[in-house]
Length: 396
Ligand code: ATP
Ligand code: MG
Picture 1 (spheres, rainbow, N blue to C red):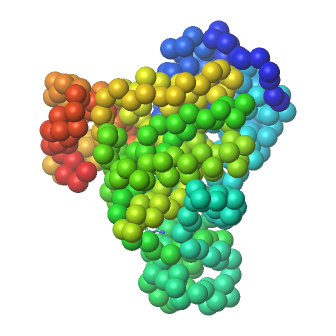
Picture 2: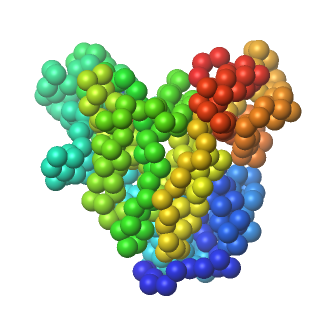
């Protein structure tokens, strides 16, 4: 369903998925005066805990979806792998953004790559670059692979996240073994590229096609999981900034996308920018926007969903976001979980602590994040180093 009039505060907004992204969406919506409804089967989900309404059913449960549609004036998603069919069902009754079609493309690496290739073909001078790749469906495809795709990374078409569902391969024999290890499901083999750095660009696109965006964000991963996002003047070579933003906008425009979109990019050693993948929602690399920008990625999600005006975000402080994983509860090789010394963290000027309300700390589980802001990047870096030392985060 489409709407012509904006949905104003006082209405209820629905979100599929109860994770931390949904929680921060609820916070943003509530601070603007909306009511929120979360659909997530988990009684203790981070978003369910803070929402006015929490419907505890599976994503495809008809009763649950009907209830969500009845409560909500419009509905969004916070979870990339929510079945596109659930969004399509809701869209027959209420405005839904992003659309089921956009989410379906982002959920499927083959469709996603094909979309990037289509954008590249149309891009002219601003054409985006895509890593060389091949789709692998059968053992025959494995044998037929061009040698120059190796060494490469074999990635499952669906359900990959935080580096899961992918295996690095150097030879045909390793590729054969990796394809079997991933269960023989359809995969994409991507050529291994020489990365100088990784970035993301987050944008919001309205129903009328208006686009606003955040600056390119420098991301560092440790063990396949985002560890830090650094956003300050000079975090990317100047020539790359315009190209990164143009690439992200072209990907969104070609999708007729409505909502908040994150585009992950690789900067190669020869300064080529390559589009890696998209997330059809706010992104972990955009959490700093809550504390360092005059409008956050979550507020922009509310605005796009409600058909409200979008204003170009202004970052008012340099910032580093440090992810807080469950490992921090086991610092110093403790066998049992210990509450980290949050009081020491809160003694640091410019430290903004966000915890997601998850009861059980597990290694590798995203429990929260810390955004450090300051007057200049040197101060931010120094404070981040202190925070990491307090929390026992050695690699960041
Ligand atoms: P997430 O959902 O956490 O963003 P993911 O599991 O969906 O990640 P990708 O983003 O495709 O997977 O890859 C994870 C990481 O692996 C990238 O951030 C990058 O560090 C590395 N990587 C992926 N593809 C390539 C490539 N073609 N060449 C070099 N490194 C790569
Ligand atoms: Mg990724």
